[in-house]
Image 1: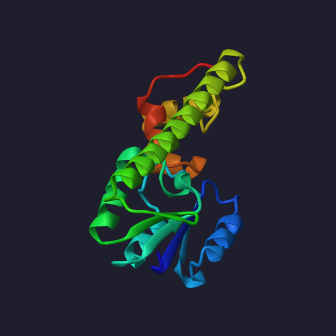
Image 2 (image 1 turned 180 degrees about the horizontal axis):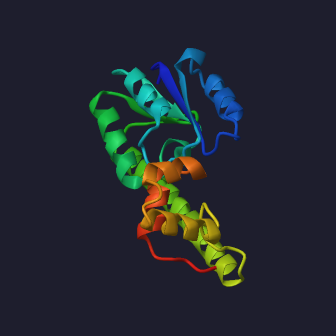
Image 3 (image 1 turned 45 degrees about the vertical axis):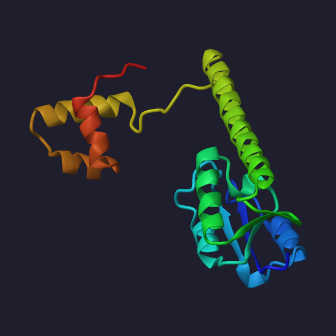
Length: 194
């Protein structure tokens, strides 16, 4: 296979780096100006991934969309299948490292679907472990949930002053440096005793 490669790299947080992925893509023959990157995205959804959208737009019939690891590309079976079907319909092959797969080949499709299934399973497993850890922390009093933006004495003062007609919702928001929606929740929501 000698089709021109277009590369895609992704990291889950802004603090992580894609240097290793980029170096691997260059080694695979992806031109530097054809490597597209997303930073700060988990890969479980395609939404708002401008780098992926640019990479998918940059491929053409006979080219190879290339990633270093499948989960850099997608961690959601449905979206992986949708993108791979679209690429195949445009005559684009899928490169995973040095290997190239054809979505129209039954063995290639089975292999890529299996990788998509494993990537989604790993993402779901990570979410489950996070929820378990949060539940344990909450049980042990180490996770208390989102704290109110303003202390209870300020909240009482806001409710009293608004009820007496002293100030408007907008004035209170400005005075306490919070959004109007926060003041609205304080006035119309249940009182919280902590």
